[in-house]
Length: 144
Image 1 (cartoon, helix red, strand yellow):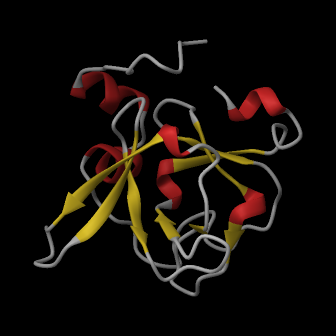
Image 2 (image 1 turned 90 degrees about the horizontal axis):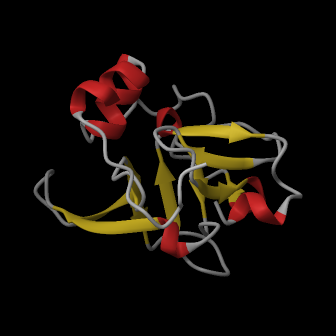
Image 3 (image 1 turned 30 degrees about the horizontal axis):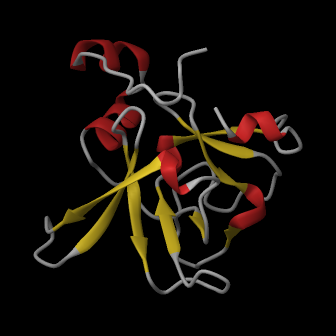
């Protein structure tokens, strides 16, 4: 297993070979999947949501909620150090982009209109995630 504290660097060709076209377009190309189209937008299964590119644990089903937006939404990451934030002005107004700190994958955006206890809404593209249904009770799975 790769060291979780070392950035995972791959060429664009390597990413294209590892990911589906949709995963590559969103995670590496900073795209957005259409609302209500992703596999996990209404998923209720327990587990750990991992980065589709590098497998890093990002979110738990325990912090997932229905925001009504059509994308998986979480009020807290498993570990804030697993994420990086960047200003995004691509639509003509300021948003905060959420990235995987290990591999730089674009995941989605974070907004300040979420529920308590954080008041945050991590709005994440399903195509950037995989659901590990075996890891929820394993404390080691959250540290990878």
